[in-house]
Length: 430
Ligand SMILES: NC(=O)c1ccc[n+]([C@@H]2O[C@H](COP(=O)([O-])OP(=O)(O)OC[C@H]3O[C@@H](n4cnc5c(N)ncnc54)[C@H](O)[C@@H]3O)[C@@H](O)[C@H]2O)c1
Image 1 (cartoon, rainbow, N blue to C red):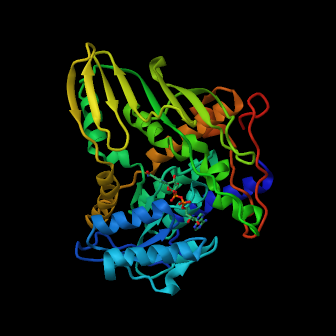
Image 2 (cartoon, rainbow, N blue to C red; image 1 turned 180 degrees about the vertical axis):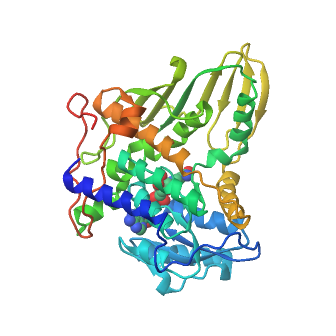
């Protein structure tokens, strides 16, 4: 890790570590529990596709929230969201132009708005640890979209933020909606209850035909362009395995009860635009105790078969937990159906916001950042094993690795990290 990056990382973790002990000035101390009739003020940081969805979800799921501030690098994204939400939810959207913030430090201004209790973090993932650390230090309740980190430095920031939130009594719910989707919750409960016997392994896939690529616009600096086209730069998205497929990896984490011992991986790329850092396929064998293997695969290949299923193999049967609205099914070893149900992902998206607000009002804040940080780190571990061709152990990745992709300096306009396609054998684990 370059010296300047290391200093920056240590300074960030030290700052949030201290935040648990020293109340930051300028922020009111949190009063819990809230009365159920109280209005909770919400700020949305990142007003793109998912930030818009999450804002609508919390307003739909909770009668006692109001949107008080919106933040985006682009004013038009925040204003467009304000207008759309206002049309759907009326006066519960209370965001005059003065409470629309832009720029890279817009999030800091939103955290200072009086009456903001909850922040929704939905920018591209690279900024997530920074935003989580700042929101927790400001004693806000947090909804953090997945993935919550794309490197080891971000993982450690999330673990520290989890502990601080727990000790100070603020909530952190994450955007791993399958954890709140009935078809997954009930299926995994049946696995826990022994319906398929001992779990001996899994397969999990996120294989689709592709993802967007946003062409550079005239006049954009390198930094502005990379943040705009963030999917294609590992420091911003974490690559497909973290950005999209962390959903499946989180299911592996959930079923197996924690992270694996090691990861062995392969993959490559042949159909990405020249300046994209993304690979277009990765396969990872995650090895758990007892030598049990969870085999994971993700890819973006055109005109190919899609697959999004998670299949859990047991000594007595097989459970298939299917993504989106496709439902779950358990069969015995002869193929006879033992149980099945439909899925409803829309309900799960709303449920995560209902659960967050309910936990705050009840004075029993949910803090679930660590499990999502571990799932995100499993994605990082698989990606780094594929990029390098080396076996990555959980112990190395979480206690020795110095992987910190976040640039030491970010300015718009400004320079950005040089895009690089990692080549196994040349690229090494750090
Ligand atoms: N849970 C899910 O199923 C799900 C679905 C889609 C996306 N997501 C996640 O949501 C996040 C956002 O994805 P998206 O599809 O909405 O992307 P998007 O590109 O549509 O929106 C991101 C927005 O964030 C803004 N932004 C970027 N950096 C910023 C910064 N530093 N400060 C303020 N604003 C900033 C951008 O201008 C953009 O408007 C990602 O982490 C993604 O993985 C989750």
